[in-house]
Image (cartoon, rainbow, N blue to C red; front, top):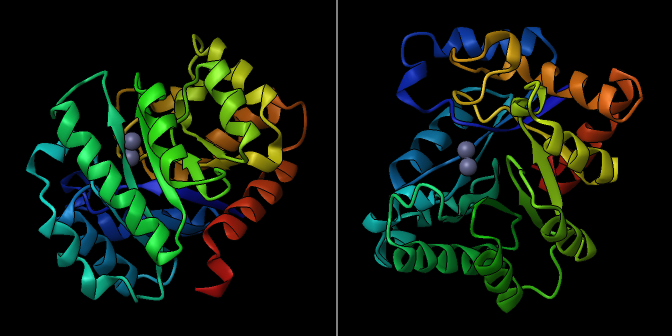
Length: 257
Ligand SMILES: [Zn+2]
Ligand SMILES: [Zn+2]
């Protein structure tokens, strides 16, 4: 069994065959999927998916790409979702200074509001971080004494940032970009992080594994990530599956949902 801790099945890329994609995941022993919200509408769509499919849990969040559209009243629009039993985290939220699709000030404003919401609701936080390590670290440190309930998704380093966050107890999740031949740095990072701190994700529809590179990704491909981690960690697929599943169940409290 595997858990895909980060996918976007509410996106239009899945409009034509969403149910088949979800069934393929189940058939390939991806027992649970966490559908990750990227704005207010996406939070509601994610909740609808969790209502409809027993294998799906959901989050509420606001991707930094869309932060220019964020305003403080938006948090209140999510009130009807916060008591839902299948809501397992806040995210994805964070800062993206690589693509800079929204202004840095608005990205920070949205990120801060959702960090506070995670604290208020006592939920874990899924962080998107690209070229923004210093600001992310400082903003998280402003609100949290440790990073035990923070996961850096689609983690890409750098190593000194990883070490500081590991020291504070953070988790890291890896996508199928770890299967790309040129991903040597990423493989080095994954080798260094204790397996107890690693979770598996696909970030579908993005980042399909090497075998399907350039095509739409889907949760059933999560086993490619587990397979690559097994070779990086010099262990078996079964060991990777068992430990990352345990990690995800513990981090997101899936058995209590
Ligand atoms: Zn992301
Ligand atoms: Zn994502």
